[in-house]
Amino acid sequence: MKHLAVLAAACLACLLTPAAARAQAAVATQDGFAYCNVTDTGSAQAKIWASPIFAFRFRSDDPGGFQRLNAIAGEFLTQVNALGGAGTKLCEYAATRAEIEASREQHRAIWDKRMYFVKLGDWREVPWTPAPWDPASEAAAPAQITRYFTCSAVQTDVPGRVARSRALASQVFAIEVPSAEPAGMYTRALAYAKDFKEVALAQGVVDPNPNCVPFDTRAEADKSLVDQRRLLDGFNQDYKEIAWRPELVAPAVSPSPASVPQASVAPATSPTGAAAAHTPAAAAGQANALYCAAFVSRTKPTASSWRAPAQAQSDPGTEPARLAATLAHFLQSVQSANPGKWYELKPATCYPNSAVFAGETFCFTAEYKHFGGMQSAGMFCNASRDMIEQRVQDMAKADGGGAQIVAWPQ
Image (cartoon, rainbow, N blue to C red; front, side):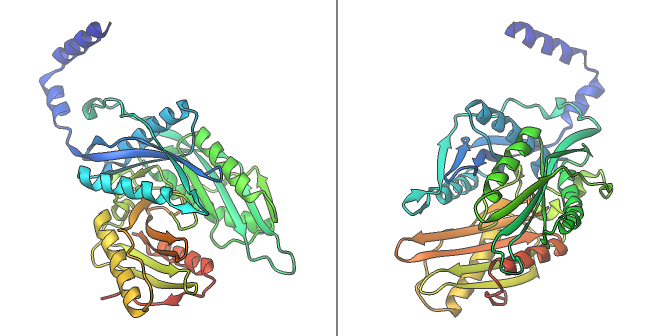
């Protein structure tokens, strides 16, 4: 049967007209290296399934390889599901094998860190490679595809003497989105979050920045909702789920691949997002701008934190090495201005975080020592000034306004 399949393919190639053959040969592609992982944070110790590094090719008209990476991420998630696992899928690529190897090792090192003598994550190697792929014969996607969303709002600043936090979540709802907008679900998630803010307020939950997260499949969305319920519906918390879906039509978006937002962790969350192409600036539709906000913190000798405001970067490029260098420069300036015992932190790892803030990339590095405490540095970048300002508000909320505001180094 295998020989018959090969023969049939050869005959089909013979029937192609010269014009059709030239059209197939004209498909331009780019090459690099990638690896995938699936992260399950639904238990006390996270579980991470990771693939080996593999050669990666994508069409040049697929900015940053977003569509291809997302498809491969889905393939790897299916493999992990077959092994009894589930979680948030992510594929990351770089131009060279050395660069992606470094990124993969940094990712693993973060999960290998110990808290109270227990590793943060259980890293599991999965021998797997993507199925063969021919860019010239890729099937056309339907005009509309179904994507799945969940929204949540959490109020931690509860007035009065009631010490219980309040949280409201939507059940999973499905929305049809144009396939010509491969990351259109992220722009819609932003619009839905604004709607959900009013819904939460009516339910007595005040959250200035509710969160709506898109998923490719119903199973992924259901898994996320279960994990969220386990996190929020517990001791000293009031949690409620409602059957809600947005009534307003999401803003129209351009079908041009060059202008779509592309997928790209916050310190308190695990890495999220479907595909990491290291190109969030172009992804957000504003390739000529990149805004970043950064922070540095240490827990000993006293808990201290420093924060740089949102600022346009002189170079809008989002290569991971460049972003890591930008954060390292800021960290060095904070260390120089604040003498004390500082660790030599490893180069930051940059993760896509569009599932939380569309077009966002988060870079983070940390070091923990049992008797020396934790030191960390992080940076959020986005092509949208409005989005990065929202992130700055979240940072201020997280540190209680107690961080020292310092300027970016020149």
